[in-house]
Length: 295
Image (cartoon, rainbow, N blue to C red; front, side):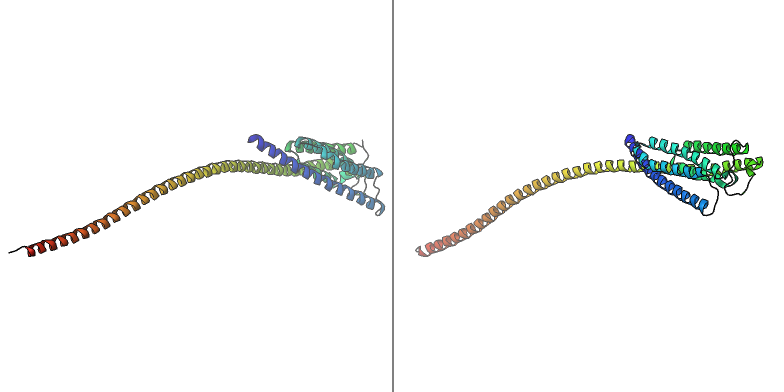
């Protein structure tokens, strides 16, 4: 029963995770395509100086997600699926970090692009792996902020706002701490909610398995009881047939006895009548003899 329950649980979670990952791939692919069109619109319609590398990055990212639609079908179990999704999210963090850099996101809310990755990871992946992604995210963002601060990487101010903020140590420290706290809140809530939901699903699967087992036991008991009742019914029918036969035989005997008794009574009545006639004839004869005797 336990092995069957675990197997059913794994199959159910694998199918649910596979469907969720497919939906996530399609959603992310749609978002990336929309971002590419928005970037093109911003560059050519509003004349912002978006780097060519951003378009190359988005194009490569879109192609990778197209490949995911086929690669995910090769995953045969839940562990392979989680490993695939985990590696996919690490790659997403790298792409997002590069996008934040080329869009000048250190000086604005570009960090919250990570929130989409961590939120979806918290809903699908085990909690430990989600936290690993969280620390990779904070490390990537902090490294990017510090590299721009120390001018190892050039800061690219795409929108022309908040210039030189990336060189303010207070701004950088505050940005990293606020980002870490905000992303931790998102990660913790999504991962905890997902973990509770999975536990509820496991309890539900366990309850369904127990219910199925109890149903089987009940069916066996019902069949056994039905068999007992059928056997008892057959025995009762045999007893009834036997009793009916005995009653019929007794009734026949009673009818015979009744016929004999009635016949005897009728014969006795006839004999009484004959005796009476004989007595009357005898009295007449005696009277006649007395009359004929001379005085």
